Length: 170
Image (cartoon, rainbow, N blue to C red):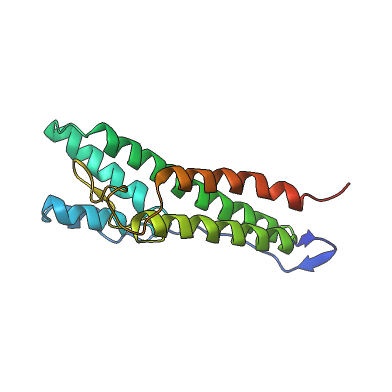
């Protein structure tokens, strides 16, 4: 069986998704909760924030911990930023798979802009170290040199408009 893309013939490609059991669940059993957050963040690099939030939400629900509204808003914005940079990267990879490398380059540029926003907001491009049981580790407003959230959201809004400039003419 051969795979054809853009008139280029490729050798047979068979994808095998193997899952390595790393014993991560067992590691959680003997860790203090504060260390568990960091372990949860290390499960998957691109989804470190969402794994950390899931761990924190499980602990918060079990311990009946109330998360402040502001922390919930910060978590939501960061989860959406993580989702955006993952989707942009995936779209670029799909474009490459069908031979549209230019689109992948544009997706890479947009993903880099999103990662820069993450770094401005949290000090880490992949949002690590931001989530904590009961809320978040840092608030945005009192940190000197970090743009206000409103400015960041405007930057995200500009990102949504830019791809239209690069639309393929028909």
